Length: 271
Image 1 (cartoon, helix red, strand yellow):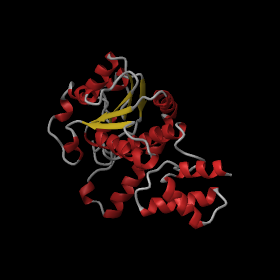
Image 2 (cartoon, rainbow, N blue to C red; image 1 turned 135 degrees about the horizontal axis):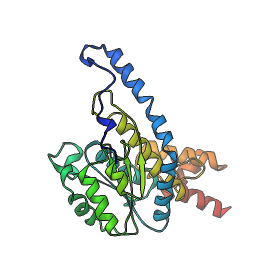
Image 3 (cartoon, one colour; image 1 turned 30 degrees about the vertical axis):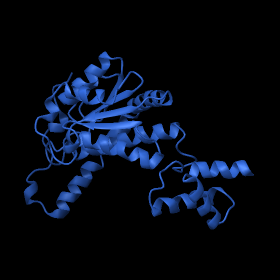
Image 4 (tube, rainbow, N blue to C red; image 1 turned 120 degrees about the vertical axis):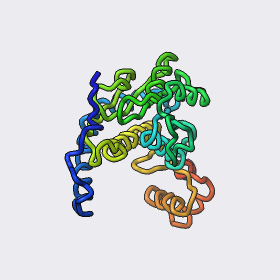
């Protein structure tokens, strides 16, 4: 395992406090341009992890994300968007070191506890039916490492999203994803490139899983929760694109069935 953390290496930009706004945002943009390349290089590893995740979810299993700081928040963000986007509840669960209060405010020393992640996971009755993904830019976060190691002992499939090569967490999991994003614009500020790369991969994991589980039809989110006027209008437009009906008829179908997928099925069954 490598002891060198490229995420902690010195920025190739210096004297940032002397740069203009344009110079600063140009430099950040230049660094961000490399993130998609780093993710692309990891597509084979991402494919293996997503394939394993889909297999678990098709059998009724859940996906858990564990992380600290930015990594933990990104996992919670991804998990929280699954119910409204795909109508799937409690299938993707994000946990952060320090608990929910750490979402908004850093909790001192929370990430240094090797036992706490497993305690948090046990509150959700994690089992071998499920899949656990550790998110850690450094690849060494004790909260994540401990959770992974204890899950492995219980026969739970594990993966990770890290941003350093040869990390202890990547070595511990069955499905490692290593995104080598390199030095940050502000040295060590892994909420930047590393966080962006992690977010991109989380999008891939959850979106691909939901598509594979039949939550998308064509290219439409047919099981999204219709919780506001914007989404209800989107649902009506989806029906208008798919069916030979009027706007009024589409509105009535959505009001009756509260779901694009159910409305489509009901309409076609009557024909």
